[in-house]
Image (cartoon, rainbow, N blue to C red):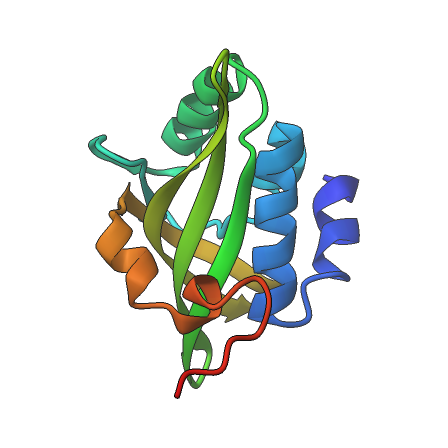
Length: 153
C-alpha cells in the first residue's frame, strides 16, 4: 500500500483531505478517493437520495458505479467548519454542473464531511450528501453576491 503512505503526506489538515476528495470526484480517480477514507469499520457515505453505505468495500463499490458514468463535475462553494480535538466537521454547499443539450446548469447538494486525525493524517470517515435547494444557495451571501459589486441606497 505504498500509494496510501504517499497520500498521507499530503493530508496534514482536514482542508487538504477535502480538497483531494473533490479533486478525486472531478477526475473519477477511485484509488485516490479511497486513499482518503479512514480504515474504521464504520466509515459511511450517503449519496444524494441514496441509502447509507457502510464500510470501505461498500463505499468503493458505490463510487465505482458512479464513476462508471464518468467524473462528477462538483465544486465545494461554501464551507462551514467545526474542529474539536482530532475531529473536524465540514458543512459544504456543493455545486454540480449538469450539461445537457440546453446548456450547462448548476444543481446544488448539501453535504457534511467528517474527518478524523489519524497516524496517517486526516481521513474522511463520513460523507453525507443530500439534494440542495435554491433556498440553500440564498442563505450563502458569497454565492448570491457573485458578479459586479452593487451599492444599494
